[in-house]
Image 1 (cartoon, rainbow over the protein chains, first blue to last red):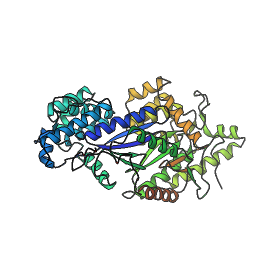
Image 2 (image 1 turned 90 degrees about the horizontal axis):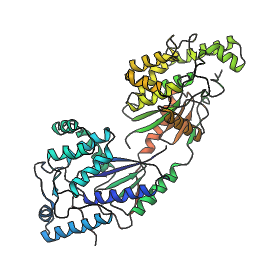
Image 3 (image 1 turned 180 degrees about the vertical axis):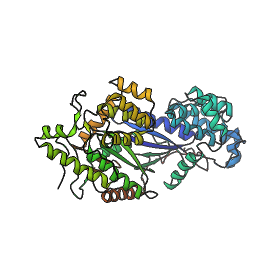
Image 4 (image 1 turned 90 degrees about the vertical axis):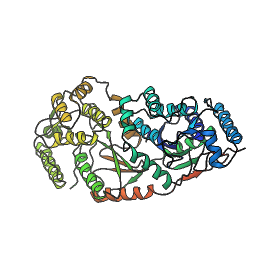
Length: 240
Length: 240
């Protein structure tokens, strides 16, 4: 009633998610005091079937996967880096690795349960896109998650148990598929409006305001069969 | 997306809330596997200005307050007891006390935070309506809340600090007022339908099914200004 719920499907390995989240966050900040937003991270893997052991520098991987030159793949990274910088984000255009993100999503579900979703999410993005160290290593995941506030032992336990939060990740992905989302970031505002891609801040602001405005109308009142027996300031009347 | 949210404003001192909650719960049980419901307890005090020290047997209190005979007030309690029994609920028609419920609501907010809302809520109802011991005593509140799973020390700390969850209770009450609720129980289904009073199970079931059916339609898709930059199985295209 009081908050506008926004579900954001995304992947830590997705540069448009990193950029789009920053644009969205700016829209929320700009509406501070006017629109009250409650964000929920939802899992989406770009490459769910990738062998977790297969971690590789993103530029040659992209070049090979999509049949473009290494130079073109590197140019794309530079372009993404420029766009990230426009949002005030650091971006290691020559440095990042690419890999399977299933474990990161499982740890993110732990973070959501512990009330630490926002800081861990942001820390994973920064570790993947802005740091030169690869996030695709067990000890690095623990280190980054712990620095963002999670308990080191709890993170290790999740990483060691392949069943931990598996169903939570799969359920998010099934829901994205049911909603017709084929790419990320994918934003759902108030369970009502679907927005695909790293849209401009202004567009996010416009939709948030629109959805907030629509949240206000009065409830539809259901008339009960016998008028509804209730207690109020005048007691608890009993109908004959 | 996956659950139907139901907010229930009620008071532990409200017999129609006790009965109405049981009727509602039966509707939810009857729809098990079909409709997935997430209930949230919301605070509403029947008598917020009552002196917390003023605890008294309900029958003479009601008789005096509403200018009816003690016999009539007692007859009302028997009638409520019969209706409660029809729902499978115990009801001490001759026994219960009446008092200020602010502390019970504050402890219920603690229970919600600890994931123990449902058992504590039910335990408070049972303690007030079915047990001969009065719930309006500090030690009894601690005992009942602890038996329902809360930490004894945490409950005591809430009771000892008049600020603990005060704002949470007041915010619930302000929201009820904004929604036009003047009595309880008051049910809000999916932030959309308002239902007042202890309605029959069949009516609750009907509204839950209706709201659930309406939850399914596809999202409204917002077309972005530049088509939306996103990553998917085919990579992260960059628009020129």
